[in-house]
Length: 248
Image (tube, rainbow, N blue to C red; front, side, top):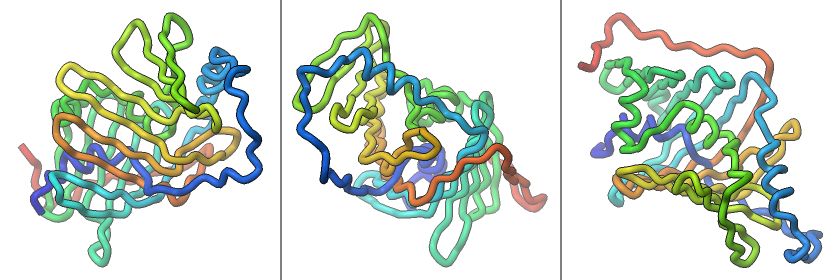
């Protein structure tokens, strides 16, 4: 396989295959009466309200025209760690990953190797200064919109928001009242995040489908969230077999 699994799995914490939203019964939208400030406030008030979030789904990866699909299982301990397991049909688990506030842990079962790197390693692979909180917010649809000193533009049933303090662009779906997309501008790369459909769990909005595209590498991920659970207690395992070799 020519795709760099390190980059794939490190990015694979971010996506879900498409599900259509039923629009039956939705009344015509009176866009002129919408209060944008109230809409931004509503979106920003949807914070994570559980200590643990688990996601099961499938990730489709496209790199340079080469496409592969994997199963994915994620567990997030709020503001602490993101644990991921990537599986292939028949083979089973091929990669295990864990991201904390300052480190990246990775096991490659296909070639019996492992590594532990500072969070800077992930930033180098993505050509973007990602922090733990940015990754967590992307996966859980918890990115906050700028609520002051922003510029806005309405295009049909969407609002485009741009903060005066950074170059990121935010896309609001006016009809469904959720953050539909974010363009994250970095010095050497642009990462486009799109959400296709949403679902509610414990008064929190989560994605149905998450798509991430990177300008620099031409890599795109499409993750379908088939199941989401929340809990106040959970556990993860990250044991490195003694027979595995460390990646230098």
